[in-house]
Structures are given as C-alpha cells and as structure tokens.
Image (tube, rainbow, N blue to C red; front, side):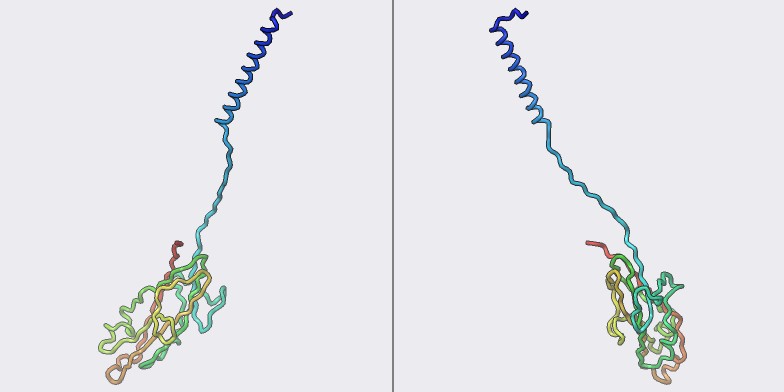
Length: 200
C-alpha cells in the first residue's frame, strides 16, 4: 500500500508528465534536424563507333545502292577500272569524259578528298616528257565539260555523288607534235579519301 500523500502523487505525475513531454519534444526535434526528403534521377547511356565505307562505280547512270557495280576498291591493286576504250584513240583538241560515282555507305557523313594526281613519268601527261609538245591533261570534275575541278566535298551518310574523269588534249599539229602520236599512258591512279566529319 502506497504511503505517498495525494499531494506527493500529484507532483510525481506532473514530473513524469513533464519528463515524457520533454522526451517527446526532443524526439521530434531530432527527427526534424536529421531527416531529409530525397529523390533521384538516373541517366543511362550507351555508345558505339561509326562504320565507314566509301565505294566507287563507273557508268553512265547511277547504280542503285547495293548494286554489284559498286566496288570497295580499298587498295590501288583493286581499283575500280575505267575501261581502256573510254580514252582510246584521242585526237588533238579533244575532251573525253567518263562518269564515275561515289557512294558513302557509312553511318556518318564523310569529307571526301581527291589525292593529288601523280603524273610523274607519264609520257602523255608529264610535261617534262612531252616537251616541246604540250601534254594532255587529266582530272576529276563536277561537270562533263571539265570546267569545274572537284574539290573536297562532304557526302552525307547514304548519299551518292556523280563526278567526271576528263581527259583533254591540246591543239597538237604536224609535224611539230608528231611525237605525241601513238602514245600510251600507263594507269593513272585516282584516290578518293573519305574522312569522318567531327560532330560540333
């Protein structure tokens, strides 16, 4: 049986109540100062490299994509051959043109450059060998008449570009230029170099 007086019991309940209340307040205070709402956002990314393929063809009409006329010709030894008859039996003051095609069968755009033609030692095109006669000229042009020389061009992925290989002979006359008769040129390599275009 409790020996506390009613006044003592009331004071104890009050003290206990105050103590519990203090704990509750401290507890809530701790929760407010240590808890935080959080949220997340995630990103995922994949990457792959591009594939590049520059193909060539010869013909009066553009071959369809995937047509057998397209050749990889990655090496000079496997070059796309322009038929010999295309530039056979040239005469003075003649312009002869053959159409060629480039196909950017890549997943990215290509900047396509024509390497400088090496005509050294060529009896038809090297002026040091044709002197005193003028040499014939050969080049790649954007038109059949051979008036606009090809310059580096960006070919979009999947697109084709038609160009012309043009041979032009000067006004040779007899007897001064008779040495230019019956002259055969060895193969002239035409190298197109495709390079990827950096993304801005």
